[in-house]
Image (cartoon, rainbow, N blue to C red):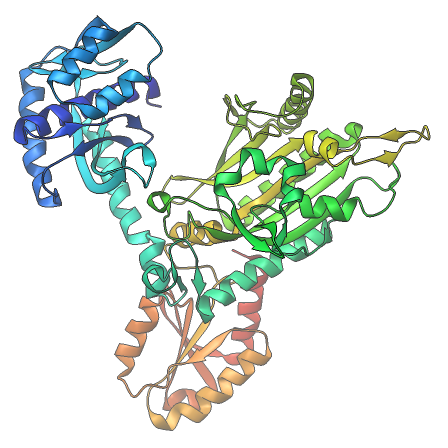
Length: 574
């Protein structure tokens, strides 16, 4: 495994080399920020002209020159007032803005060759240590991520310790491009985001996409019922007082959509938990009632900045497979463990690997540190009971409690945000939730927030990329494409379709007056699991000629036997 800290240092150093190259090629450029990121690095520039991807090879060539010179990275510590004078002379207004927010009296600069940058570091010893790099793309980025600020130009790149590692990464990116759900969704007639016509961040499912989503949602509902959950449904809006009680009004208001109704403030729900709490609180509860598990495929709306919206993966309106578990404190670990079992079962069925993070108390939080420790201990104990490895993500918990974040690993090794399990002692306190204990006294329940897939939209986007649009039979919106060779075969094709539909198989007929080769090619492009070619011999023998995705011609089959084999494959969820 690569040393991530070393790789981060290489990438951050590469961002400086890129900035030096851009500054040399375009002297009027103003520098903003250039960090390393999980997949590489970027640098934001304020430039007098709009960069195009055709200019990236020129910047790469300049970077190669700098690397060949093996320039040393030299660190210097400077009094803040001297740094301000230097940056003013260089007219680097973005660096000046960052400098003024640094509380220390001294700051550091890193110099390589003639280039110097305000930076904490660290860097490699010299530019020659950057062995393998590639510039990837250009994008717009608002300064400080605010739409009120100027749009800058961001150049993305990546760097690795070896050329072999870089080549493998570029191959993965090439494969990822083919799997991009933003292209596959419209191409496979599944979904799209009509940004220009209807606004950014909202998903439209076409009939086939609605079938796919319906399959997943039906499966989820069945699995929840099997595991002791009860379904609930709550409204999409509620009075602002509800969100003031929950604390979201203070901690999350900038992400909430609000409206006036009868001169009162209402909120379009950004999460489902306060509504589920009201349902729990509607009548007295006993210790014998607990745990109570409420489940809802609840649609929520959150304001996300336009710069971070991304197909189905980051949207403003989405549906969560959301559940809230109200339990006694002595039941907490057992219930978390059951949720983990549920999550791992889902990962296996959909074919994902996973990695686990434990997100701890952030700087802004509600409740006591003792409660936070109790909640964190319950999460840790559950992970240890399952012998699961995890990484601690310091300060990444939500304001009301710590959480387990499970990232999905897809078919080409990428990680995606997925299931979360959050322990919460704060909302039961804020809403004054109670149950009568075995001792006859009132007690406060614990609360678990959890999703096993996460956002349905994000999951479908990830699933589309995971399978490259070639969904397994049980998920495929159209399981069988029927391809009559000529008009005289249409009646038999209709009879076959009716038998398939009556047997619960999703089937369509391609009744276009096209050559059979074109029909087969189009069915393959639509990634249909099975194709049935209908000709004279099939009508005479009362058979179907089967083609399977990725396997080609399987020959003539008895229709009844073919249906049995389809049902077995669907039931196996392979």
